[in-house]
Image (tube, rainbow, N blue to C red):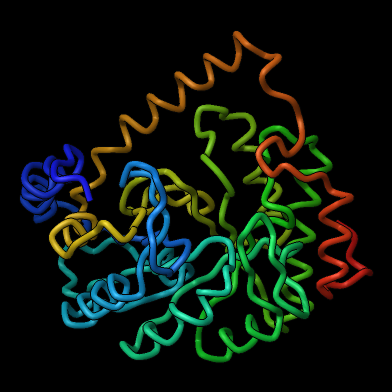
Length: 317
């Protein structure tokens, strides 16, 4: 691991103490933790961009939550919270994007050991009667999703095909949002009210964000999360709540800093980076085209893969 990380030093030794000092005078925020995979190994990226968490590190973090008196709640409970600065109860929401099989095999046993629950967001087109492998990632089966639900885990939507929604037509976005919810409800047998926005959240595109919010409400969603960095406050949009990314590099000092608002300062640099990327894209329009540019697969191919896995030929992707 890198010996020096400026984002870690600033979070742990500058912004965390500052957040604790200011937090005493304001409403207690709710950290919504964002995980992806629980597996050994690391990607060849900067720790900021890492999405994996080892089972050992994840267990260490969950033990800390339990021992520190955190109460793991779902998004509905978090959004109903009034932000009372006088309360001594400490809420946390634990979320997992993508529905990888290691949520079932690695994360769930650890969560259950420490008496915690989580919400897992599924790209429904990649969940089948058998585990489906797509782009070297293995996803849970529907039977495993139902097991997780029976253990107290909440199931949410992460669209059907995990596309970049901003580049789709209005009808395609509506299809991704609405049909994913219906597919999951049909398989799990319970209401799906939470949504996780895939990829970087385009908060600068106000018209598009308003459009997606209207679609989510119309399709029966009650809340949702985004990739915007930060702890959640009562004034935040309940459909696009900010989250705190967590990974294998987060020792307990950094993990605590993230829980208590010490990582929120990175929301500013994150937003600036998105603005610059949008400007760059606008002056080089030929580099971006509608559809699913980063999936490397079209809808027809994904439909065949999903059908072969048993996700239901009556639900074309």
